Image 1 (tube, rainbow, N blue to C red):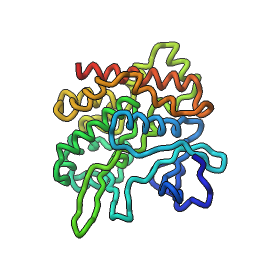
Image 2: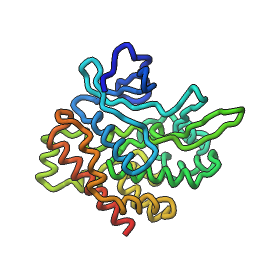
Image 3: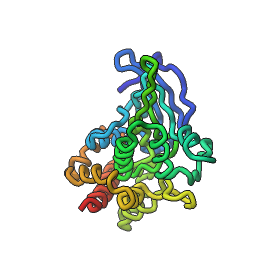
Image 4: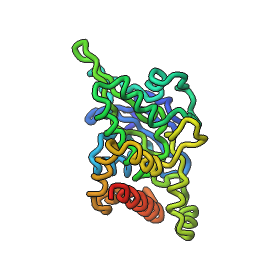
Length: 287
């Protein structure tokens, strides 16, 4: 999609990448983001969104976009201000639900644990178990794409005021640029292939959700699902069963959404192998 300069509205300060909101007169409000350096954050966003579609989870719509000759990705707004919808980010919610939680700590926030996220759902939502199952699906999705950026501003709840009543629900999953080896250049991918280290790359990843608030680092998205399946099987089993019932080729098809020239052949091979490793491991959990 081509973004016209006259559509630009306002910049977005949240996060570390340059981005701005624009309004397409036909399709509405979108957030345009540009990848850092030579990274593949734009195609990672698009592939991730298509994987989310295949999985049937509620996700933000993403399109590849070009603005003034520069490539990026555009994410459609899912919060309709006109109908009273507001996105409340996880850090704001955790501050209210967890005593002593620091909502402004951007790195090494070890209190950002799954159990504390459950506390938010229990304290705010009318049917927290349904939301927990949906969030579990988000984490399984993260494990498939290797999303390491599920920090406390990259999930939230949608609040809506209608006829003096307030309803709150889990927001769609969004912001998946930190996935699929997007930070690697082809020489690094070649070394990983040469040493047969796809599994090592996946298992050493550090996510933004901690297992315990005494941990020094977050665990990998795949390991988070492994431990969660042991601890919260009722929440994670349904999503894992759906992954088991899907053909691997179906989950890899989203790679075909990326036109030639947007990512290298080696990057495609890496994404395919990384996702295949993750899918195989997830399918074993529901055996």
